[in-house]
Image 1 (cartoon, rainbow, N blue to C red):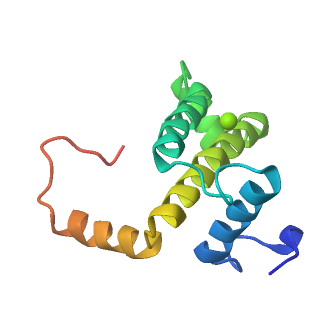
Image 2: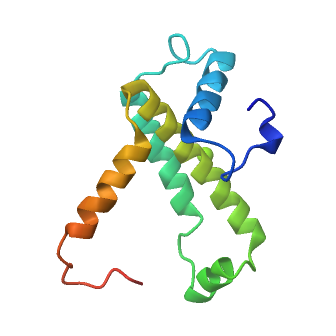
Amino acid sequence: MNDRSAMNDDNTTVAELKEQVHQLCLRKGWGVNGVQNPQHVAMAMTVEMSELLEHFQWLDPENVTALMEGRDEERRAMIAEEFADVMMYGLQLTRTLGIDITGQVLRKIDIVDRRPPKPYNPKR
Ligand SMILES: [Mg+2]
């Protein structure tokens, strides 16, 4: 699909998203033939993860509730943007290393499904 404005989670494959990120890298002249050093990409990903966490820093429970109930559109938009940065690096990393992320996520779901419960309750 070439019309990015029509792409969304329901009609776009992970492979198409990886390709979109790769094309961006090519347009920007990043890396060698659009492929950046995966070590650098992994480090950049943690920086973007920190930027994402910054939007959750020092929130009161009421702030989190407002966010979850769709009453804080400004914060939601900032979180979405930072999460996109994290995902873009993740997609780039998996493309470079030939990782099928769908297969890996499904594999991890199976592993976690089989794992015995932890002593704490992670349901919160
Ligand atoms: Mg960012």
